[in-house]
Image 1 (cartoon, each protein chain N blue to C red):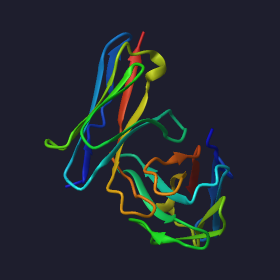
Image 2 (cartoon, each protein chain N blue to C red; image 1 turned 30 degrees about the vertical axis):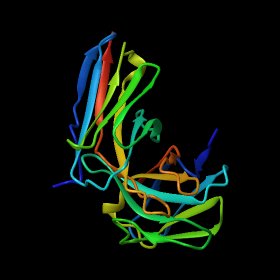
Image 3 (cartoon, one colour; image 1 turned 120 degrees about the vertical axis):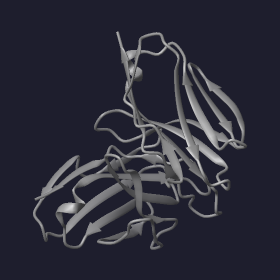
Image 4 (tube, each protein chain N blue to C red; image 1 turned 90 degrees about the vertical axis):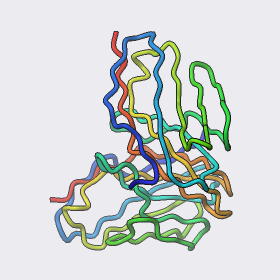
Amino acid sequence: DVKVTQSSRYLVKRTGEKVFLECVQDMDHENMFWYRQDPGLGLRLIYFSYDVKMKEKGDIPEGYSVSREKKERFSLILESASTNQTSMYLCASSPGQSETQYFGPGTRLLVL
Amino acid sequence: QKEVEQDPGPLSVPEGAIVSLNCTYSNSAFQYFMWYRQYSRKGPELLMYTYSSGNKEDGRFTAQVDKSSKYISLFIRDSQPSDSATYLCAMSRNTGTASKLTFGTGTRLQVTL
């Protein structure tokens, strides 16, 4: 069974704070993804990575950065959190050139 | 216009009903089609995966793809209260590296006793 875990289920942060969201997968998948999910907008891709130390921008990368130092771990960083980054953040992974992605449970982030 | 359109619902049906969930899309390059189920406050889980046009059946679930009409469907037979969730369609083009998925916004389904 594929397991994708995220470091926190709920987070509350203040405007301007630096926020780290961690994602770990245990299936040796090459690809990892970060999405945010908002009502009426669905899932939107922030960044993805197809290999260690490789990253590519998704559809909404502004205000975010990522880090992938090890194959199993993909971190999303909010350099200076803002209230419009309040959202549900979902991490996913997929093997090789497979289309199917496996999601973690999500982190609900509230920025005050 | 969004690349993938999906009616947000909510769709409310009685237990035992046949449910039809649908998505339309505009990009003819999409080749891979998926349905995810997402329970409240959880991450999406993969339900069905199909390549190109045709039908695929898995237990009470049937996925249908009509590429000529740019229309995909998920049918749920003998619906159960445990099927109450949001259903997301997703599709991709397979660009050779990590394939990016384009999601619909999801349809919320409620199956009542």
